[in-house]
Image 1 (tube, rainbow over the protein chains, first blue to last red):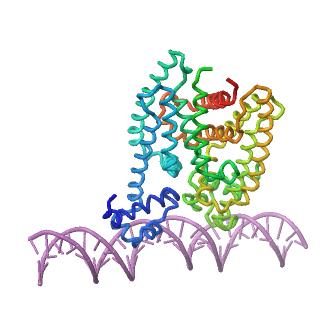
Image 2: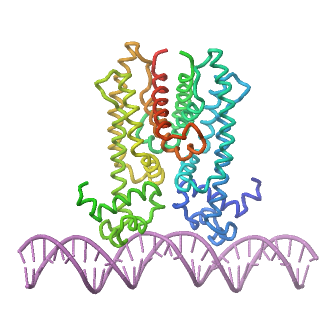
Image 3: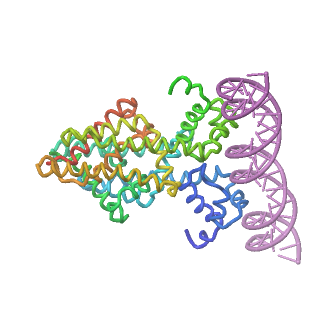
Length: 208
Length: 208
DNA sequence: TTTTGTATTAACAAAATTGTTAAACAATAT
DNA sequence: ATATTGTTTAACAATTTTGTTAATACAAAA
């Protein structure tokens, strides 16, 4: 985004819309509120995007693309030994969500409340997921044959990784007031949580 | 709920409201839609509950109570050996969420979008959590001294348990179309997932 | 059987929210 | 300079949604 874009009203509306939709969801968002935050009259919003629905679609598309990227992060670096690769994958995925902490709730709410809209999208993401699965499962099987790790179902491991990484941010506002000292310092907590997630998965796959 | 209650219009409205609020959230819910589902005119809804907000409060109170119960489930049976106790706690917590699969999303959305409403509630839940923590941490420390398990931070373990158990249901509609065979049969998948969560936590706390 | 309180309906009112339009204005090309 | 095109504003329209009210039916108590 160059300087022109920053002053550009259309762009300002997109920025404000992203914030509004991510925090309040489609139903909770108000086009007037978005316009106000963007510093334009609400007629401008309709001029550029016609309807609330169309503006929303723009944000959804971008957010689903972002989510695809987070899937790639979990894949790790294929040139590393499998243990290091999985460690790196967990860490990269965690960092990715940390930079997009509002993303998981947004995606989940969308999918749950309007599943019918996302059939096309599923096909795109399915391909990514299948590729990651096969590649990782192949490496895991080889390492298991060499006796380095346990023979595990990679799909289950990936679900566990996503669960622990994503839930950290999904439930953060809920847990924070409940956990006292443990979460007093956000950065410190997140670092500890990332280490814990890695440790948990490592222990799950390592040979006893 | 006896037969009278089932025919009772006030009760019918509560049933319909619960369904509507849990699936669509406060903003997405419509009082007219609730009234229609309950088989009454929407004036009746206002007659019994005055405002949408008050009707919502009723549902929120009940759901937060349900959530407190889920916390107790995770505590397990204190008369069992620590390993069995934790296994039982994970299993009971998983089953509890399985019976209330819409609960986590509802609670998280509420807390995130209106944190200011819940200060009173936090105090109540904090007490529960603190009690569970101290009791479990005490048992874990004793078992660690006897060399049965690793010395671990129970708060971290509990967060991991909640993450894996809750995320299963939070993201189910999202993962289901992506996972093909693995999730073809819901009951089978849930059983496998529960076993995986228990296995993961056991490996995390067991002495190598 | 009168009275009293509760339940119910239909019509209406108020507010919020999204969306439209005509006219003014600015920028740019011809 | 003027025509053209795109941008902006203010006022308005339509719809949806929540909430109210007056009239009425009904059931229980006095």
